[in-house]
Image (tube, rainbow, N blue to C red; front, side, top):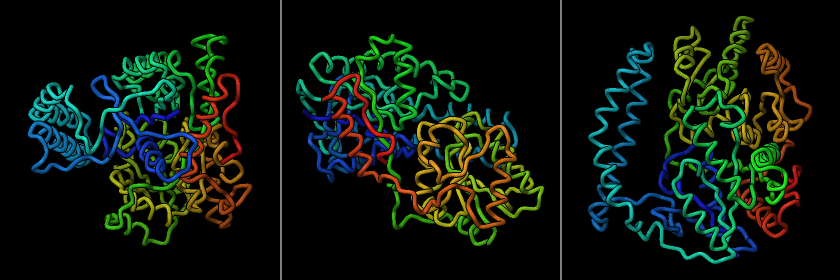
Length: 458
């Protein structure tokens, strides 16, 4: 038996660094360093074929690169850089002050970008059946007892017919589920994503032999949703398990530059409270502003530092932040932070604050607590699973509860949790990868009806 670890999206977008991409890269990276009962092979699917991944890192354009492929690489880099500059420009005055101007800018940039995207799409179309560079991927033949573990974000992929073909050849299908937020909390998602995710989950419910979630909380939700869709008898033919994520930051570069503005912020002695996540509605940044405004009204010197890329449905929030009277005084926001700067922030902050409405896991909590940084979190089940008595929890309906906890911490120096965060232990990425493979192997061997994983094994 072999485990074929699917990483198609990360292979195609090697510079993306959000939560799922971080998980995929770290698991793939650890496979060679851990002893396993089964061979694990990183794979990607393209053009109706399966490939062994030899390198997730993108190729550099050199004289040996075929002309068409070299042009694709250059155009792809140009497109990414183009929209990076757009993301920087849109934060400047007067665009940040006017929705209409931001819309005009976006439409203008979209039209201008056709000079890049149309040639790129044409080249990709003609290159669709072309083999990838052998330095990155080579064709792979499957065996009847292989297990295809869908680790990457596959709901927007186009490889479903190939996965069904592999299943017909005797390959088992295991789906890693990060969360069910588009189904359970559609109000926090783009309408298009909700439809795509719903169709994907309908497909994966019928196709997968087993599911591995990133927390016990999500595993229970997955089993309930599969049961609702397929009925109890069909749902019981699948197995359900979970593993936990590691906490190391994998893109730290020794020569990476620390953000000067962040260094300046930390030179002031007043405590800094961190919020680390993409800025989007379900992360509930507005709650933080409400809580800290209460603190500031009481004369607190506590500062709030928001770290994360600007996401969707957050124009009003970003405007509220950048126009706030405390902007760059006791309120800060950094949207393009490398891992070295993030590590520095974790090391120098007073605590992490994480007010999400819903999460599949909550990786910043683990990243912070693993470094000895105490964490305040919203009182939701998955945070209780991760933090137990080592975290301090607040009521999402009352910002005053968080303000009170922070004020108490600043005045007494004693973090308001039942247990000391320095006694908290968590898995690293090597242990997390081992959990994923071993528990998936248990699921494959034992089949449906046998619980996989232990909530207290982290």
